[in-house]
Amino acid sequence: MDKAKVAATCPKQVELEAGKKYAYCTCGLSVSQPFCDGSHKGTGFVPHVFTAEETKTAFLCQCKQTGSVPYCDGSHKNITQ
Figure (tube, rainbow, N blue to C red):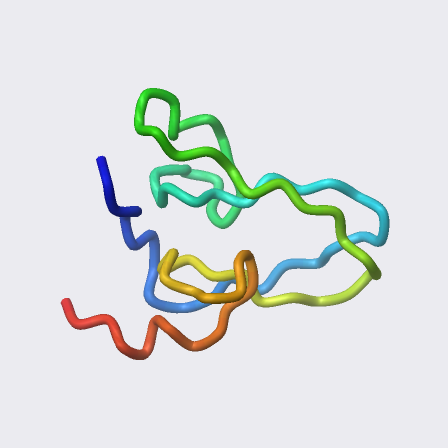
């Protein structure tokens, strides 16, 4: 697998907690989108681990095309299916 699967063509609204670590899915295979559940094993993909800088509502990318991982940058608008 050399390209991530498009999990959805819209971002996922999540509540992030300041200081908490999160593992964002980069392969698109996780059933716990947008977070990693280990489904990437054997694919060459690894999760993007990040720590939330503040407690806030965020929109995380599910199309896996964003240029600002893990946050949505609107790239899903350019996906044709």
